[in-house]
Image 1 (tube, each protein chain N blue to C red):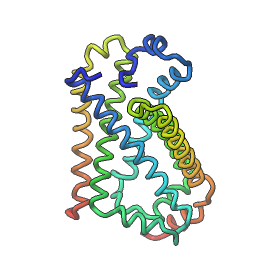
Image 2 (cartoon, each protein chain N blue to C red):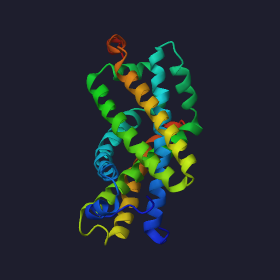
Image 3 (cartoon, chains in turn cyan, blue):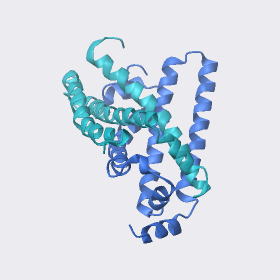
Image 4 (tube, chains in turn orange, red):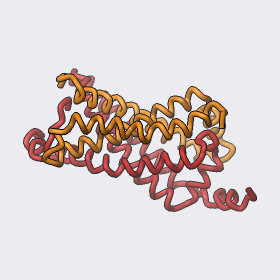
Length: 119
Length: 140
């Protein structure tokens, strides 16, 4: 398992992001379920609490995790179902990082000004 | 499963049970679907709008649309199953004592089952139609 280099970091990041996303998913379903209490229930107060900037930075990290996990997941599918995927796994991983940046940077440019009120 | 099998034939050979093989296949199929479902979800709720403007009115308006309820039901089901199986892999890798591993997994499955029921109730057990119609009728 610990053969080092790119393959190991791909695995470590996939697992870390996966665990974080799964735990976030559980919390996210629970907080949205507060709409069941109706417009006068606790939902709006709860969201106002979550809209403070530290949580919004946390949400950006979750979004970054989604983008990496999605692209690295596609890399895993390619490795598993093509004859050539494993041979090019290292190149594919740099592709994953590149694709994560290509999608992630515009997301940052869109959302960071919203958080810090520059928009 | 610290080192997952890398090909279909390896997966067939290395899993002792059919259900473990089925989960291996499920992770790849659901993963592919989730790329589209989750990116769509993030686009609607974080890119098209400022996520910090989300409130009860916004969520009720969305849940008053049938396609959102169906979309979110698929998202909820696939994401929870993909997530719980991923967490199970991690528990099996890092929790080595049999007793502790059993209880960790039992508690995990119980939490996920409760969250699935909560999410399904949120989507289907309430009528947001009146709220949605009222919001759409508001002048901008």
